[in-house]
Length: 363
Ligand SMILES: Nc1ncnc2c1ncn2[C@@H]1O[C@H](COP(=O)(O)OP(=O)(O)OP(=O)(O)O)[C@@H](O)[C@H]1O
Ligand SMILES: [Mg+2]
Image (cartoon, rainbow, N blue to C red; front, side, top):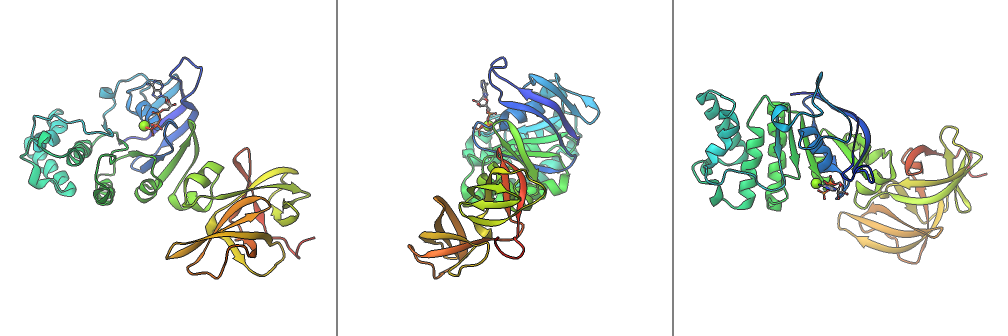
C-alpha cells in the first residue's frame, strides 16, 4: 500500500491545445477507498492511467510514498488495475486466472491456494473455479477480473475503472458490498472510477468529484450532499440536484428579485450571486413569512414516500421536497424559506458564502 501524490499534474492529448486534466495537486491516502466521480469525458480514465503509469502526464510529478514514479511504466509500480471490460486468459480456468498474479510473483503454492479460495469465496466464484473463463458469461468474467485485481495483498493500489458496467444490475449491489468487505479486509488504497453517484456514495470513504479535468470537491458522501463547494457538485449529486436562483448581494443582504431572503455570511462584496439550495432544504408553506420568497406552484410529483413540489420564483424553476400527499396544488401561491445554513452563495460556480437568517425581519 502506498500514499499516492500528484504534484501539479496536468495532461493534454494534443500538445497543449486542450487539457484533459488541468493542473492538480492531490494525495490519495494510504488504505482509503476513493470513488472518482464525474460525467463522461471529464478525465477520470486519464487520471487513473496517470496513477497506474499507462500514461505519463504532460506536466507534473507522481509520487508513491517518497519514490517518484512519473515515468515508470505500470509493471514497475506494483498496482492492480481492473478495466471496464474483462481482461482474462480465456483458455485458463478461473482458478488459474485468479492465481496468475500471485504465481507470477513467486508466491508459495499453499499461500496461492489460500488467497485464491478466499477471494473466490467472497465473490461467489467457488463453484466456477475449475471452469475455463471463456465459458462464463461476461458479467461473471468481469467478477473474475475483479478477483484478479484484489487477490494480491501487497499492491500499492487497486485501480478500478467502471468495473461493474457489464455486470447485471441486481448483482451490482452485492458486488459493491463485497468490494467494501474486501477493502476492509485488505486495507488496499483503492480508487474506483464511476459516473454513477449512487455507486460512488454507497461505496467510498471519500468521493472525489471531477469536472472538466478539475477536482471540484472531495469529501465524505454526507459532506458533498450537505455542503457542496461547487455548483457542479450541487447538480451532479442529489436527485433531483440543487436548485440555483440568480440573485444579488446589496449591503450584506441577499436579494432574489424584490425579496431579501437573508444576510450574506462574511463580508461578501456587493454584486450578482447565485443561490444554491437543495430541494430537501426548501420549506414551502401557504403562509407569508418574513424572509419568505413568494412562488407559484406549477406541478406536483407524487413519489410515494415524498412529494416533489415544483414552483416558479422570480422567473426561475425551483423544486422542493415535502412530505408525501402534501396539500399543495398547481396554480396556488406559496412561500418558500431556506433551512438555516443550507442555502449557499456561489460566484463563478465556486461557493463564496452562506445565506444567514435575517434578524428582525425584512428591512
Ligand atoms: N487517447 C486519447 N486521445 C485524445 N484524446 C483523448 C484520449 N483519451 C481521452 N481523450 C479526451 O480526453 C478527455 C478526457 O477523457 P477520459 O477518457 O479521461 O474521460 P472519462 O471521464 O474517463 O470519460 P468516460 O466516463 O466516458 O470514460 C476527453 O475529452 C477525451 O475525448
Ligand atoms: Mg473513462
